[in-house]
Length: 416
Image 1 (cartoon, helix red, strand yellow):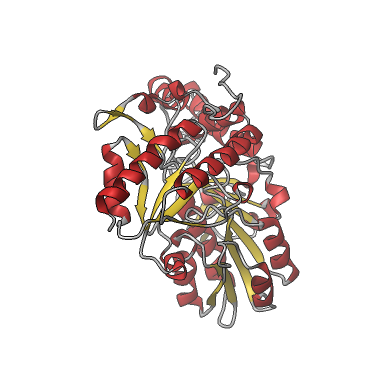
Image 2: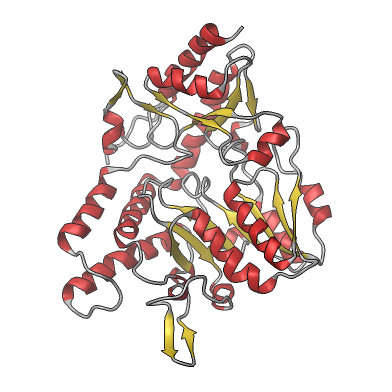
């Protein structure tokens, strides 16, 4: 990769846009300005090439074949796992591949929750959770008789730690908390949350779907028992997610799915199971997707996670300043760029977020509109939907300019 320009403001991206083929295209006759990375990130060429090479050169099933092609396929697949372990400074034994972050959370809810929760137990979440970290726990609570409780947020869009602490007790068995809110951009102090959970004997799961692509993370430093994230927000392909867990906790859990590879032995009387991560990876896994994820991890580590985080703070400041300069706009979440991710969710009176997104689309600007799979949070904020602009390593501060100009035009055209 070539070194991007980093002097002065406005800055360029920290990764060349030329590395991402789609960013050189046009939308509605305008240069594409992609500001929806919180939903999915664009893919660098190295990811596309790695997946293509797997299919062209080493396509075979993994783990069981003894011929050379299968051995090479297995090596490329497992490289994806070791790459994730390297990214998070953790053991590959605790890296389980899933379909996405939602499945990773479901794995814990069903493999651990159904077998350990009972009537009277409590699961503590927060008001800013994505549906993926709400619905699985509600499903399991309905089966086990456990209760789901929600820690509140402040009017500034931050987690009310004192209120959460007051909710935790011997009844609490799981505390599941998002690391970065996909709506508010809030960065939660998950290490402190995990510490609070462990003090009452509970486990802690962190939803890292937004945080893993945006900041340096050491799994042990988080202090949690489980960390879930997804490949496609990291520049990898769709169809692969990750559950990172403490190996002793994972090996104490029963499998989520049954089938090939996840077993130690099978007889007509019963089965015994492989150790983690194999016991949670039944059947043929997402091989090409794991290869692509490994390439994506190498790419972001080549850029540097500390560098990406510093750039995110700069982009957050530019988004807050630019969108915040528009008369009448309300931005939800912390106003300090250092406390948030490079995304802003906003509301403009008399302009529906879907109309805003469609008008911005005409300018080649891609943003997200809706409830962002956070309906309880929308209710807490008193809105039905917001417009969200989210940036990543391939965006520069200059990408904020067409966004702000487009919002201004929408305001003049639709408001009042």
